[in-house]
Image (tube, rainbow, N blue to C red; front, side, top):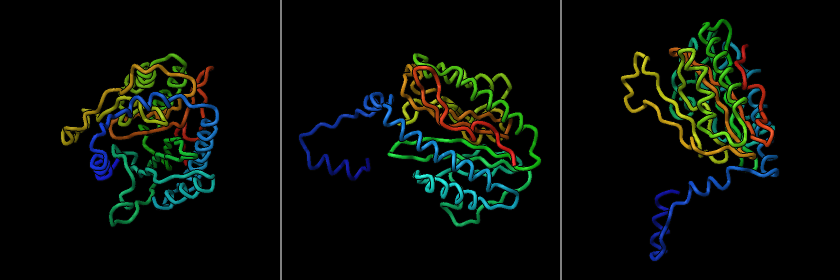
Length: 278
């Protein structure tokens, strides 16, 4: 809530006492019913269409803005809503940055894809006020072998998450299962491997690798521990499995939206669940 709105409420209601109940409310709505999950599946379908558009558009010489535009159009054409998305063109596959393209908020030309680059996208299509997420990585041409290896490790992490998912499993146990492949391979994770959707209450831990040459320049980004590790998963939970692995500065991030049922995990996406190559 904007400060001005809250200050106005306090002024207009001088005898009222305001109590934060966000966490309690979020816990109540984590498990969604069948009607809501239908809306979420529609949102994930829009995300799948966005992934297909990005894969079809990404080629050497294509501008970052063209990829962005193709993804947004695909979302709207599929009936979804996307307010923004993340596109990163990682030169030679090297990137430990994550955010909206710089040309969307400052005066500079969009980046252009070159041979050996890696295009990573984070998508947030919604339908009926329910959000899905997809993490897509597209390797272009002759990429460094560390990119391919990171893709294999990320896929192993994603599959470990699917195996671990089940009613009664704690969120912390799920995160630990997904974390193991990268750790065993000597890699590291930049962004959370998994978090809850609708709402974002539980978030897996992550952080900057201390082995990076310039990690000392970012003393406040050492990472954070898993939030909501004690929460037991239930049927009706929606989760973003976003397995990622970095080997040095080369990184791959994959995964989509998953719904937990009484019988285990139900994947709502296909294309983003593995490293794509064009």
